[in-house]
Amino acid sequence: MGESVAEATLTTWLKEVGDTIEMDEAVFEIATDKVDSEVPSEVEGVLLEKRFDVDQIIKVGEVVAVIQTNGAAPVEAKSQEEEQASQEMPASQPSQVLEKQISEIQESVVVPTPDFATLDRFYSPLVKNIAKEEGISMQELEAIVGTGKSGRVTKNDIKAFLENRSSNGSTESKGVEEKLIKEPEVKVAPAPEIPPKTKSQVQSEAPQTTVSAGDEMIPLSRMGKLIAKHMTESVTTSAHVQSFVEVDVTHVVNWRNKVKKEFEAREGEKLTFTPIFMEAVAMALKKYPLMNISLEGDNIIKKKNINLGMAAALADGNLIVPVIKNADQLNLVGMAKTVNDLANRARNNQLKPDEIKDGTYTVTNVGTFGSVFGTPIINQPQVGILALGAIRKLPAVIETDQGEYIGIRSKMFLSHSYDHRVVNGALGGMFVKTVADYLESWDINREI
Image (tube, rainbow, N blue to C red; front, side, top):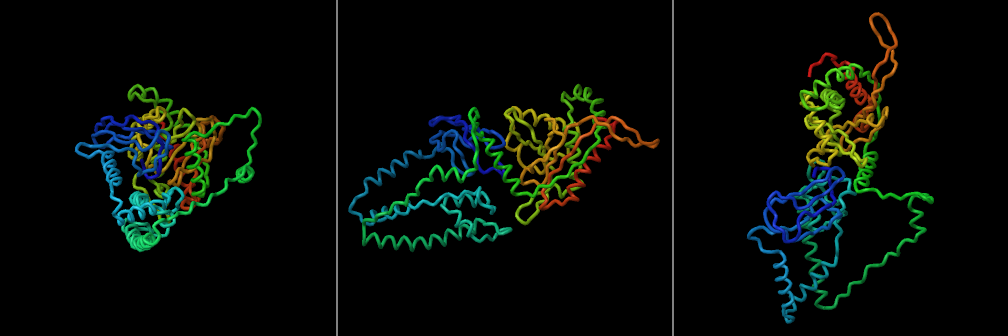
């Protein structure tokens, strides 16, 4: 689902237990904060088990369903045989009874599954899966010394930790076994009860909100909660600063008015301002590649491809950011077709997961809602985002060889938010000024 996606919500089961499933046939649907998607089966078989219900949260790496393929033994039949064998075990075998008691005691100790969303340290999906399967707590995981790049924990590191823990665990198990021989009955003390917080305690900890008569309480939607979390984390992570530039786009407006009917008749696509602005941003990123980066720990990752995120509004008021891959390699016709296609499928909730990931820089058009300019929040892990203000006709001073005069010009503001941890004011300002210069020098006679 992409590097930034850690969990998803199961929205619909498309198959029931006992149904036959073909290869690549959709089994269930999931939803993230970015996109809804069907999950297809990679094998043919019969659905034996569903491990999650609708509206439950699934973390990446967890097993959602069990499918019996041709020639495989049914999972349920195997578990029944094991259960029957355990019930028929003779009571005269003290060693087996002892092993069972030890197993029950060990199983009663529950190790919480690490919540990786709360950890600052990076862990690969493989390491996360091993930690979940082996019941490694967050404290244990954080204590492991990593030998990988930038101190990352590798597969070998976590295996070495498990081997050391196993050797210590075997000694502990031996002590438990000796204790059981002397004292067969082992009583496990109940966990201490934590008294529930009183109403006054809860109210004192939470921000005070006054609800008056007639007020309506509207719960946040699933996507709303995830967007709120993503935006808060971005503000906490990046040092946001802004640079603003006013741009004279009179040439761009006049040129588009001149060619838009011919373009639509020939290409079957409308020519909006968005692909023109995207072309300008892509050219500026080529000139200033240090705006096309991300920060990981103490390392800057300089991106090879220029993948432009394009914020698009959905019918419910939320935003989604489809990505134009390799935007600098598209001509204006290709850019216009890509922009229109992504925008239309975003509105119809038809985007694929691959089409909303791997963005390296984002553009948002706040002028669509009538805003003159805005201060957008950076889309992590990127380091910059550009807001396009509304295009307005304004009186302006026009300089000519014959002198200066007042005229009506089409103008707009560009608002550039960037991460001041890695982008200084000079780079942030020069980048947005380059976008402005590209638009102001637009060739009114350009052919398309």
